[in-house]
Amino acid sequence: MATIFTKIIKGEIPSYKIAENDKFFAFLDIFPLKEGHVLVVPKTETDKFFDVDDSFMSEWLVFAKPIAKAIEKSFPCNRCGMTVIGLEVPHAHMHLVPISSAEDICFTRPKLKLSPEELKMVQQKIVGAMG
Image 1 (cartoon, one colour):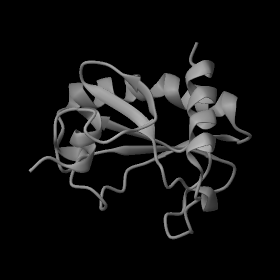
Image 2 (tube, rainbow, N blue to C red):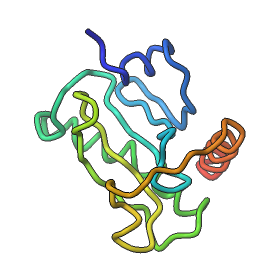
Image 3 (cartoon, rainbow, N blue to C red):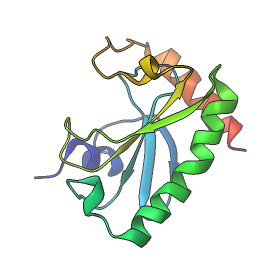
Image 4 (cartoon, rainbow, N blue to C red):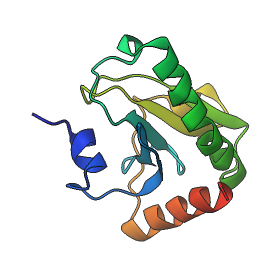
């Protein structure tokens, strides 16, 4: 059975897409820790992040880099943090989150509840900053 991320990638579930290529898909987390929280996932279902081969992992990080830079330009923060938790969905993914402290990337914190209009504005800021 396809994961929720595969359904998002295929367009079966709507998303706020940030970027896509033949191997990866990036979209807004709809229950973000902070405005600008993006998920970056491979199009191929792999449960664990460290099960992907080295060259694929390198490509994944290179794909994520301009998104992270755009997040830093779009939201007040010291940097874009990256974390791999992977417990919520059995489909490897990385979280990119604008952070100013370690607390900003704490997944036990309550998530934000943004309206569709707010999510659209966040999406437009990041995509616009990517050029």
